[in-house]
Image 1 (cartoon, rainbow, N blue to C red):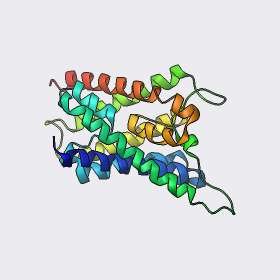
Image 2: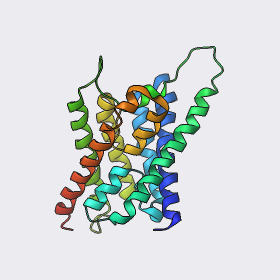
Image 3: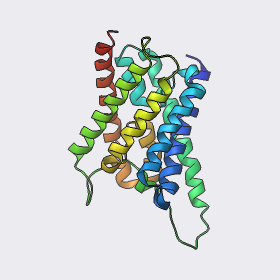
Image 4: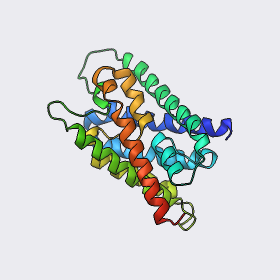
Length: 228
């Protein structure tokens, strides 16, 4: 493991959370809706996988890192440093958008969200139960790992993995945004929750445990499917 690999994970996660914050804070409420968020996040992972994936493997997600460990594709000893780099990259991106939001001058029609609104959550009026949120995050993250491991298999067509992974992430966000605001990624969940505080921070444990469980499950299933 090199500092370049950690830098790539920091930058890749920074880009992913930038896409999340930018689209969810500004594009979604001004007419883009959840489709804009899903597209932005899927394309951000696609572009960064091509840009820096050859340096670090392009995880950008603690659940992916641990899922790849479970799938026999990544060294467990390297996982803690990768996860730290990913979380710091996400927080840095959210911090930038906190400053941007603070620069709103007022007046006119307000068409942007808050960090609380874009954080992952469950419960409350109009929300889903903890069980529903947990099940959703486990299932979609497991499916995501199955796509990642399949697309990056030595038997898969070369050069197309980032495209498959980005499209999968887009689809899985379309499925899960109405339920949990779509995590699949503890680093993505941590970043806005820190700036939202309150319920988002109290519920953050769910969006570490469920995606990591799903990632590990997906990694184990893929290891069996790919006969690795």
